[in-house]
Image (cartoon, rainbow over all chains, first blue to last red; front, side, top):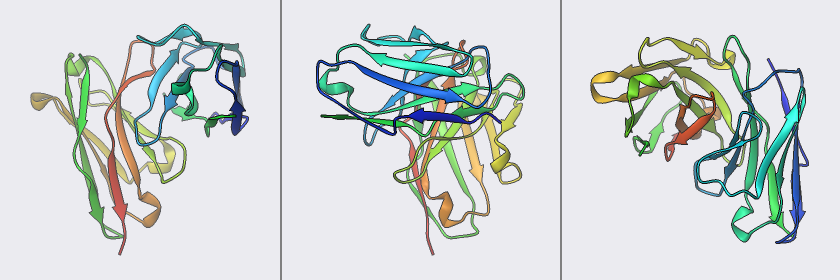
Length: 109
Length: 118
């Protein structure tokens, strides 16, 4: 079973600055990698699917990249509403087991 | 638009079972898998398993094998997750979510708080 390790656990960034969040997988896989945003008291929201595609309604300041075992979520210029917890997620091919990273909390500096 | 609505909060005693429902609307229910994910207080997301509403085929995380049962009722476009032999470690918010064409979880319900306490 794949383990996803996110870093850092907490990231402090000022509004308007760039944030880079990382996710490393314990084994390489080809695709089906996603990122979610979760705000307190809310359900997670899909941001990025298939490693680099933005979900419907997600602003262009969010971008995803990566391959193999290393994946990145970049927020180019932080808005106040972007401060939240972010989770990476991948899916094993078969059986179709889903795994989440432990999360990165993005906080205002 | 896609909408998932879960049943209300539950309080259970250790050893009991809980069954949470997830009512889907706004899309063809049998065309998309439904997943269940839980989140313990101040913790991250934990995937529990998924069900294909059409075939009723299931895949469960190994941790929950033998204790979780996922079902669907296509006549009322509702999915269910039943977890048995509850302990305090099962206290969490339980979410259902839809798996999209790209195998990610594009729509989530609001969550159901299950509290296990004697």
